Image (cartoon, rainbow, N blue to C red; front, side, top):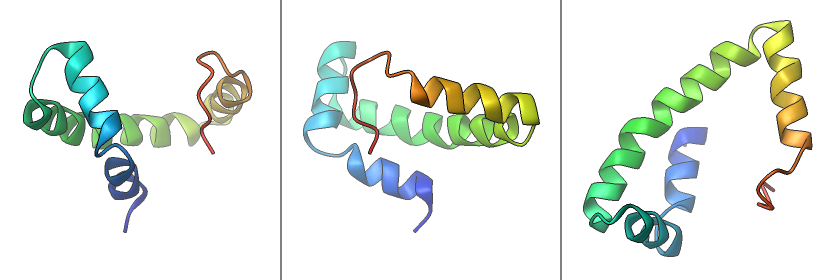
Length: 72
């Protein structure tokens, strides 16, 4: 299972319902949007992290918990 697949699995249930409610769309629409966007975002993060400055910026962003989310 890829990291993208694992993230998609983690977003099912309550997190998906929360996204759909915040956007005012159905769970099916939210799932489709997340399924389309997540691979693109993961690819962009990978490309950015492949560059030394991008990797350092990503590490800094992960170390600064701006949202209060537990990424563990």
